Length: 375
Ligand SMILES: Cc1cc2nc3c(=O)[nH]c(=O)nc-3n(C[C@H](O)[C@H](O)[C@H](O)COP(=O)(O)OP(=O)(O)OC[C@H]3O[C@@H](n4cnc5c(N)ncnc54)[C@H](O)[C@@H]3O)c2cc1C
Image (cartoon, rainbow, N blue to C red):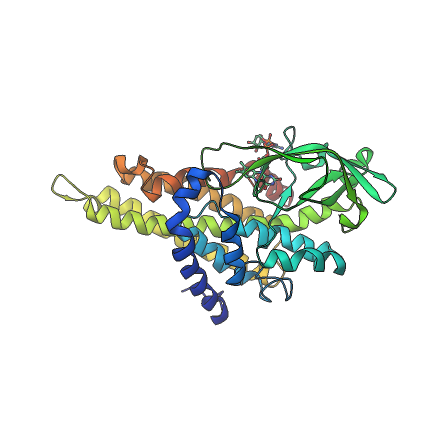
């Protein structure tokens, strides 16, 4: 029994589940072929109150991170790996809310809660990902504008985004202490998108390259203090890592359930695959591990709701859950035999979609660095 959620969370889970089953699951395979989720789905989610749930009204649904968690769990249950809702609602919008002025909040957030504007965050560059302090995109102050030059890559929601929080160097000589966050908006001259990147998984997700060539960004689009961006990023990354852990734990449970069903139905040598001791023991081990992971991730969620989740706990949750997911989904796929390798069986898609969980939001190696530093 999970104890972390209240009744209002569970009510939202019900509407999120209905939305996912009605508006997302039947179309996701088509979006995978198209490589993008249509913007109309974002507006529908906005109408249903499924965006920005953790932010106060009128910037969002007036809830807390528990509301975000139930939505992302329901998204994961239907295998909708292409929906960039969580990145928008639980990563990008919280930056705008926490570090934005009242004028900035009013300008951007209500439209984002309605799904009329889509957000992205651009840290990674072709030359640097893990080593965030080494970003090379610059923003030079000229009067009341910053002039931005540089390039970003692997940006989730990159094609659909109307607004991108861009990590820039405002004082390159100061390294990590010279980083700022600037909001670049659709239509600014010199801001362009490159290719929609072809990935091995997350096929419906519009991951893109972004280019900035002498983009004049008004000073009103600076988020928080100049040169304080690195601290903001470090603070917010804990929530991003918890999101990944919640998704990994849910994916393990969902795929365990499917594998149980499949192996009960499929027969070999005259008996269900599920009756072989090898299958029973593997599934029993998986159940024990999935339960242990759920208890730990829920504990992290509880801490986060009390604002007590530390960066190292978030790193532990991301590291252990994504590594466990990779290992267990591989075992589940094996139990499906050849059907596991076919795209139309959910396990194959989930297995390949899971691979990135050990890479983005900080790689497993970087998570180990963060944990090791505190020992
Ligand atoms: C599908 C997808 C979506 C993404 N979405 C976004 C997004 O929306 N916004 C965004 O900004 N970025 C995004 N990313 C980028 C992602 O966060 C980076 O890919 C990730 O942080 C790793 O950076 P890198 O690719 O440059 O790898 P590198 O930093 O080059 O690392 C390569 C390898 O070296 C290892 N390594 C690096 N440093 C160390 C060290 N100190 N000790 C030991 N090993 C080390 C890494 O762990 C890794 O195994 C996305 C990536 C993908 C694949």
